[in-house]
Amino acid sequence: MISLIIQRINKQVMIIVQLLGGMGNQMFQYACGRHLAILNNTELKLDLSLLENRVFFDKNFFYRSYDLDLFNIKASIATQSDIPLYRSTWRINSIPHRLFNLFQIKMEGFKYVFIRRLNSYNLLRYNDKVLKKRGKIYVAGYPFSARYFDSIRDIILEELSFVKDLPPACAELEEKIKTTNSVSINIRRKDFLVQKSIGTHGIGYINKAVAQIALRVSDPVFFVFSDDMEWCRENVKIDFPHHFVNEELSGKRNEDHLQLMTLCKHFIISNSTYGWWGAWLSNYHGKIVVAPNRLFQKLNDVDMIPQEWLRV
Image 1 (cartoon, helix red, strand yellow):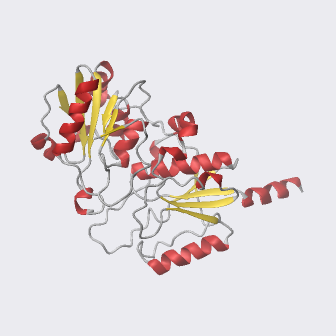
Image 2 (cartoon, helix red, strand yellow):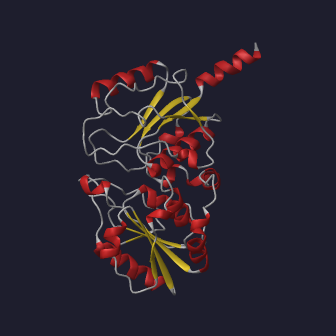
Image 3 (cartoon, rainbow, N blue to C red):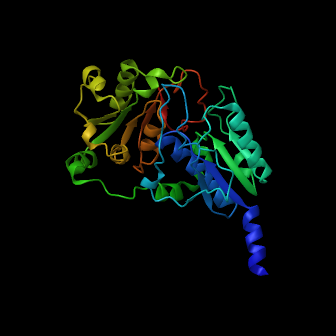
């Protein structure tokens, strides 16, 4: 009898987070969901069904894969017995399919939390009601604010630590980063060049950010990480010691670049959640993080950049 009661209670309290987007997006979604699971005293489950769907018709769409297995996360993968999964035969951008899936989720008794208003540029505002939710909850959207998990920072740092150490090929660069006043510069370009609502930040921003670092850090050494290193080598000119980190050191899913970034002491980030996490995961005391004054061209990002970070 007691076991049946416990099973019933467990079915009434469940946190499931929908994963969507690249590694940085998934890390935000995990961190928010993990905090909500802790507050509800239950486990976190991850819905990969939309992330792994490959039915789309837009040639400019960038498919992503599950990346959280690179970290020491505390979550399991949701199954059909947990939640009505998005069918692999449905198109990702089909509104009728999305609505029917939402209907199924609500019929299962889930409170549906969507951290974005449809067709709104209010994408990145912190919603203080999310963490107050209790019970059977399904979280979708983009919780792009550290305010969703800052109060459990130590837990997130531990669980978003890397499963594997850096490979021997990174040893020399790792030593340079650790023994200098290292500054990570993350430049995101390729997929953002075709996404008008996001855009990219050019050399003007990089120059301003480098100048701000130079005012605050003695003998800085810059390490450039990018998905477009050819462009960086041609355009990024820095009057301080600097290194363009080779693509060969990125790892199969760019996890080694991210791990190297987290070892840096100071940061210049672009409009990339991947670069954002490189800075946030750093535990260097007194780190300086420089971010663009406006991250995205058409999206409100007022809550994405922590107040202690510097905008230029």
